Every structure is written in C-alpha cells, then in structure tokens.
Picture 1 (cartoon, helix red, strand yellow):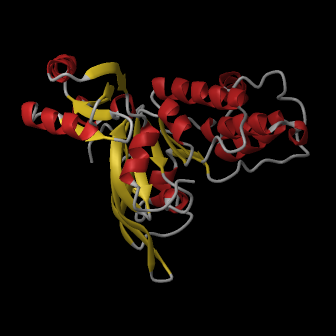
Picture 2 (cartoon, one colour):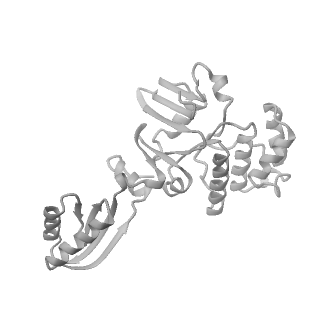
Picture 3 (tube, rainbow, N blue to C red):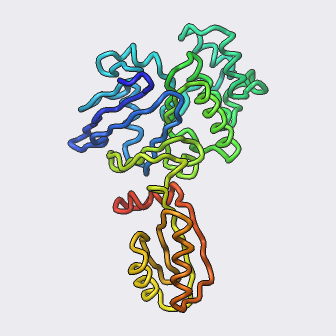
Length: 308
C-alpha cells in the first residue's frame, strides 16, 4: 500500500439476504484529504462505513487503514480511526467536559489533550454545561471532539450535517478543514449535494452499492468543458445543424428555448457566435455555466430514480 494512502478499499462487497448492498467498491483516500461518499439514501454508504470500522464483516474484498488489513489486523487498523457512525454517543446527564474525560480515561488521553480539542471545536463556553441542554450543532461538535481525542489518522463521519442549521454546517466545515490541513484524513458521507461540494476535496458517487464515479470537487466538469447557453431568434434545429457541420469539435444540444453547447475553450464560443450571425441568426444571449456537483450527480444516476 502507498505510504501516502490512509484508507484503501479493494473490491469490497457486502451481501445481505442475497443482495449486494455494497458491490465491488474500490477507492483510496490520501493523507490530509477530505473525501466524500455521496449518494441517495439506501445507496450503501453507511454499510460501507460500518465495514471500515469493524461493526460488520466483509463478504468479499479488503479494507486497509494505514496499511493494516481491517479483517486480519483489526486492532492495529482501528487504533488509527476516530468516528461518528450515525449519531454521537453521549451522556446527556453529564457535562460536555465530563463526557470527554470519561472517554479520555478509556483511551489513555491526558487532560491537556481534552482542553486542546475543546478549543479546536470551539466549545469552551458550553463545555461545563450538561449535554442534555446542548443544541444539535453543539452535540455534533462534542462528538467530533470525542472522535479526535486520541489523534486519529482517519476521521470517519456518517451524515455529519443531518439536522444542523446553516451556521452549524459552516462551523463543521471549518473544523474539518483545519484537521485536514494538520494531516488528518477525513471521510464523510452524505446525501446533501451542496454541502459535499463545499466540504470535500474529492467525492465518490455511489448508487445501489456501486461506485459510479470519483470527482475532483474543484473541477467537476469533465475534460475542462463548460456548458454554454445561447439564445437566438430563428430555428433551433437549423442552427444546431449549421454548427454541427461547421464546428465538429463542439457538442451541440438544444432545448425548446435555446442552444446548449459543450466547448473546450472561450475561442470556440466566439467562433460559434460569428457563424450564427453570419448565417443571419440574431443572438440575444450567451451564458456560460459551470456544471455543479448536483448536476453531475443527477446525470450519472439518472437511471436510478429520484435523488433524495
């Protein structure tokens, strides 16, 4: 295993009642990366995470954490992991601080580290209040603090933004980016497309247990192409046929209202505009749109039903 990889899945499969809930799933995650598992509810994200942390066994395949096989070297692998699977497990009748101290004693972590993680997740003002008085966002922050107490190399968070308000989501993104910048690898799962686009460096799109694609979040448009929308007066069909004949490198689509082009450079847009004007078409709008992660996700999973 590459020394720069924190997590690697090789053809991982989980069969439940004869069905492959996770089906030949393979990907790797690098040190200091925030990597997302994105898919509709029921896509197999939580099942995959439960196998990573040893809560359920693998039917086929291998999972490596810091080069250690989760199946055959479980203790050596899991010592590098901190995580929240589904909901943080907290004692509501204790203060946030006593919750952390309880966990610190089990992990052999000193008080100085407890104080440090309280600062990291910005809970100093509420840490001595009982957890039952905490908002959902504060509970999530405390859960993250608990998960990183032992300085894990890999932090796994299953649906971490569920129920959070916009400020809570923004705070969580900031904490996770700080951890990643300091060398912690973060794996998050979600069905909230916009949040994953803001949070992650790369995203694996999963549907029905299968890996559909892995996208660089900063460059989700394939091969540097953008979609350019052109509004014209005249026959869209004739304009499309003209452009396909004179610009074979440009992919031309059209809706009922406009032409939609996939181009590789701004110069091609100018050439297309000149062709249309020369042919007598009146061009009244040219707009280039970046394809969002949501657009790409819907395209890739369009045969699998509605996105939840």
